[in-house]
Image 1: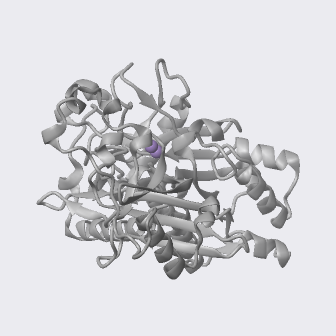
Image 2: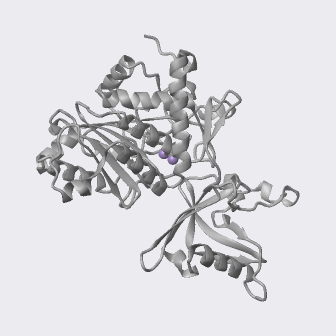
Image 3: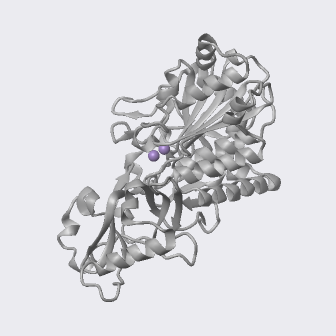
Length: 460
Ligand code: MN
Ligand code: MN
């Protein structure tokens, strides 16, 4: 067959359009419930439990013997989650694994953040992941996260999402006085250390020095029973305030914060939860820290996945070092992350044949990386051929892509990490416009096709 990429909207009949809208609505609710890695993992855990998944710690405690059809999940530090549905086939033959990341670019509040300057109270931040800093000023921002007191008690914080909540923001210089600023390079227009969040302007009565800051501290004490020192053990993330919205007059798209990579996390999880039995054991991995190199205990490079899998084998009565190695080597993975959608306004950054488009289906990247595929997992054609068969048999629309033109940039994913076990891995996911901007855009049709693609993969 000839290669052609069609806009996929016209392939749907009325009943399929209804299923598509249902998936979109559920995805938007998932986005609204999870704007940090912790919140996404919590939501995902709740969805898993509702579908009958049991915490592996409980399995270990009760010495439960796992058998085909059993559903198990594990979390790590509330920031990563792995789900397993035990298959009929011997585990040594490997698993079908879906993986995505749940962290997104944002501004993290520093550990000694609060200060006052000229009657304005501020929070200092350090940005997380790759951002165009100038995109984050003058928009409503929300604060999400936790403050952990010295006694271990945890304060959950979400400010700026409820319509009645206040929002916070970063100022920018007015255009009238910006002659000099407008001459600067885009990377320098707003500097990293100038991403200061304005959080107050009202002084406490009868105070001379730092009266506004004192007002904020009083408020924090009253609302959260927290002291200034408690910022030391806080993890507060500043994100765009507001909900996911339908985009386009025809409502064909979704605009939201954090599509990268919750669009793949949601579709992977939702596809996984459709199953009650599988031939090959199904696994879905939602991990943290991809945006800063998959580092740390909750990032894909940690032993969390391998440790959890070892526990799973033990609970199945199958654990041995060799079985673990064989099962991992015989596994197959769809490592999912968003792909850059072709943007006609910036056409020169893309190569039209090898780029992803909105509304043209699930995206497969044989490789990612930058500057000569550096840092990429390069998937095998034998594996891709089998995936083509599976996708075609299940009428899933897909496209192949690279992240932009050769030598204009690039990006990484978690694919290379699982590939270390010697398993087949390919990068795939959903096309996104404005990737890493405060508000990113995806096509509802691509979200729907991608979920279908994952279901097809897990059923094979
Ligand atoms: Mn990503
Ligand atoms: Mn990213």
